[in-house]
Structures are given as structure tokens and as C-alpha cells.
Length: 213
Image 1: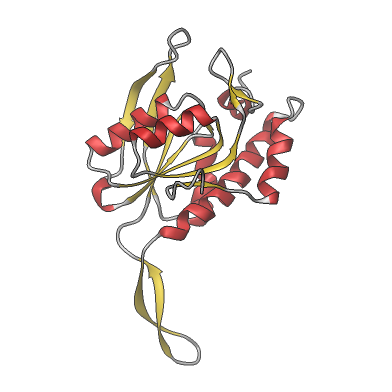
Image 2 (image 1 turned 90 degrees about the horizontal axis):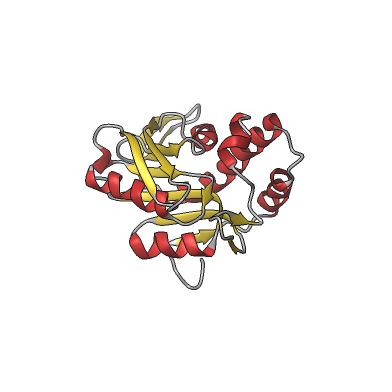
């Protein structure tokens, strides 16, 4: 919980902190950076998935029949914000491999820092699925707010936002724009700099994941 807000969870886990320190290092190579982003995503996803609804079905064990819990309803939807969000997808699919995967393409104007959408493809029946929006960095919050706007316009209601690091400015903007969205953050960093980058941050996460520095 962040500042008493129930819908914001800072995942204060020693392993996340340790792995974050590795990928903060500018000397960490692309392969290691990509692998650790996936590992951290799995740990954050584990916390976020705690809220999934369950139903009971009859299972025959080697000993007897029993009523056992399974995830209820339609398969969850994983929606990365392109392109950096792609680095988190496998981490979530490790936990829920039957999930449906959509994509939202956003880019940030380098002058105004405002987000612009160029692609949106979501799984069917999005209104009946838990939707997990992924982006490693929550900086100004603009892209996250707009991506969730698109999902809501398509009928999405049960929405989660997962990121690895966030700036206070972006976290507050996202929550104030979408107070119903459940937000899970690997680490809350200090602030944004004058260029809109998170400090101390990770640098350009997309470039570091895909080796396009």
C-alpha cells in the first residue's frame, strides 16, 4: 500500500530490490537485462494475481474425489504497452500460460512528452477478463493513462497495471486518472528529471531490452 491507498502496491521484496540493482547498472548487458526484467515481472505478477477469483470443480485424486479451486471465468488478458512492455510478457505467461495477449502501441513526443497511440489490438470479450497492462517504466504516467483509456473504451473493467519502477509523479497521475485500476510497482524511485526520465531509473528500458542503444 502507498500513502494509505489500497489500490497501489509497492512490491517491497528483497529479491526484487537485488535484481533491480543489477539492471540499474549501465554495464549490465542486453541478455542479462532482458532476463532479469522477465524475472522481476514474474515476481510482481505473482503479487498481482493474488486477487484472481476462484471457483471449485470436482477432481479425482489418486485417493478420492475432491472439490478443488481453479481460476474462475475467462482467461486473463495480458496487454503490454509497446515496445518495452513486451519484455514483461513472458514473466506473466510463466504464471498464467493460457492468458490471451493483446498489444497497445504508444510513443512519447520527445518535445511535449505527450503519448500518442499508433496500434491497439485487444483479446475478444475484454469486458469479461482481468486485464494486466504491462510497462516497465511509469514515468510521467501519460502512456499508462491513455492505454487504460483505450482498454476502458473497449469495455475493460477489471484492470491491473504492472511496472518495474515508477516515479511519484507518474504514480499519482495514473491513480488520479484511474482510481479503480489496481497498480503494482516493483520500486518507487525518487523523481523525474527535466527530460521526463525516472531518477535513478533504468535508462531507456526499451533500448536496453532490445539492444537498440
